[in-house]
Image (cartoon, rainbow over all chains, first blue to last red; front, side, top):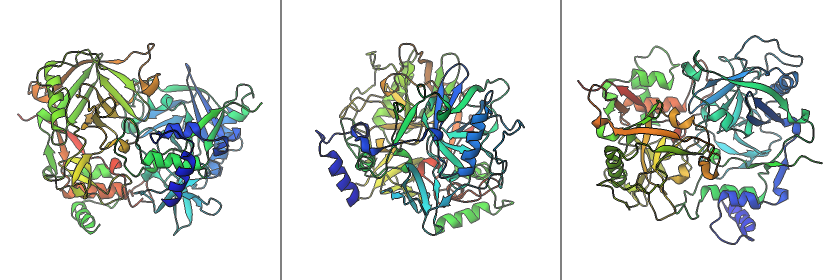
Length: 294
Length: 294
């Protein structure tokens, strides 16, 4: 808590008043607090009839699955796919619904269980508040992670907007052809049981505002119309002039520490009682759109 | 943890296998584990064009606001109202959008700040897992609550489906004419800053699957069509033959302890690694529909 308090004091020094919101802190963060997301890690889904969802991939946590997903995007595998499952307070899921469509070159059909990775190489920054799911939580490489000192392994965490790989029953791990996004309360019990490959950056409403499926597990019924996908591309494949660019806030920045602290201690014109703590999933890593490099 | 383990052993004794899901435990719960919700605490919202949302009111936590809400429902105040605000991963809000419509008899226009209540009389059952927001969390009278031994006050908690009273800036507390439901990650930072009056029992998708508002705070823009409300009634005002009836699972039952423990320790055909903990908002009190008494 001491380091957080110091960081807050540093970050807040130029501010006019003590009634900042988390958004105020993000808006005031200096250029140095932001880290560019590689275009190869940005996946753009365009829907039939308009609408776009942008996803950041996490190759450092699920490298084989992300390699699969990039190959699927580059090959046009998902053109004509759909969002065929929407389960309230759980997930929206898209793909070809295991149609048996042939895999393009470069897809590993039976990937390893990339549900966690060695802690080594991550040096996560610890989150200051209690977590009911894991002995340690924090942030590394711009992602919310959980880890165990006993196993020395770390995993990404299921929060709102987290993207994972649909699979059948264990030990199947899924290819990446069927993906889901969390559209409700963070489903943290899924951590370490399934491969997380990214998170939604923009266009979350394209997945969260859909009619819920009427069949078991939120699968769409015959009387429902799954939302069609027209194309999926990596940002790196989009011409430079049209390519969207994004940054995340570095967890080592003073702005990030101030942001988390303010999420835990809301006090402004609306909030009069601060909780003094915040859930990992309620302090999402700030993301922003930036102009493409010229 | 010892009492939980014992409860689980008791509840699981007749079960065939150790691979139960939380739903299995709820389905197998004996009649004695369930408590009828009074019809006067059940509010039924019917939408224009079909669709229904059912809400359980919590008079023991916000008595003046709930009295207002009952008076508004009985007077037909919300006929012609709408869902005019839908903010992704936050709330859907409905009412007349502070239209200035006259209050019916019995409405207290400036209610007290019923953001918490005395702990006395509740005797909550403690939740076994860590919470980042409050020194104590647990369940009382069928509701997830947080409390502080220091203040000896308890509050309801903002989880998915929690219903609260929209208000302007502090110290306004809202009348109950404008209500919201949480449609994303539990907004626990709002606890103790606003009046919680209930939770959605059925028809959550009528509020969560709506198009998100395009204006600030998710307010619907001029090009959007707010979802219309045709009528709002208390179940007690619906003829007995058509009246929906509901029960909640008692927190003191062995089934509830087993259910929470299984939420924290998923192990079945899909889950192979149990978290060993669960968030308060990810173990919602089981609710079920029952036939109306004959």
